[in-house]
Figure (cartoon, one colour):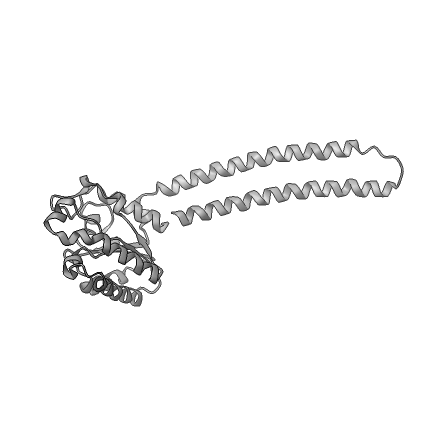
Length: 260
């Protein structure tokens, strides 16, 4: 979204510059005409007040016209931005696919996204994603969101290096099969405080996300941090999976970051 908004702002700025250049050109032409007239008249006394008044009048009129045009452009841009932001998720994800685990399946379970936009499987670990990646590749997405990792927290027992090694293997496979897709990596979602007490290894999720973001920076992939949009009321009873209310918010956040 930010990318598209910046493009629209740049286009509006270009239109403003064009209008101002046209006005400046008109004033210059009139000034030149008056100057030429004076040069042809030589040293004879000439009353130039009428010409000067005409130019000043034109300048005032043009400034008012420019302000009106700029105001109209800004209104159009604001409306276009609002229309863009308010598009349905089905349109925003028209050329995107989300690949993930059981948490990701909620997008289709709760009818937030079409099944063709979600490739996910319960209990999925990083080193088991081969079939999912092949399925996603068949859909030929322009944008691919990865939402993996929670099931690998306990498996790596706090070893973020081992976790990143597995994630890099996933990236290599994705890039081989979908070389033209733009990649985005979601953070590992935090669990509830109660779940953290039951399984202390989950308290290290922030460390995993720090390592994951560092990997994204190294690989020049955008990291999507969803921790701020997770609220206690969104957790299912297991403290790990999410209720239906969370998924539209998550999808909108991904779309905003990706500018789709």
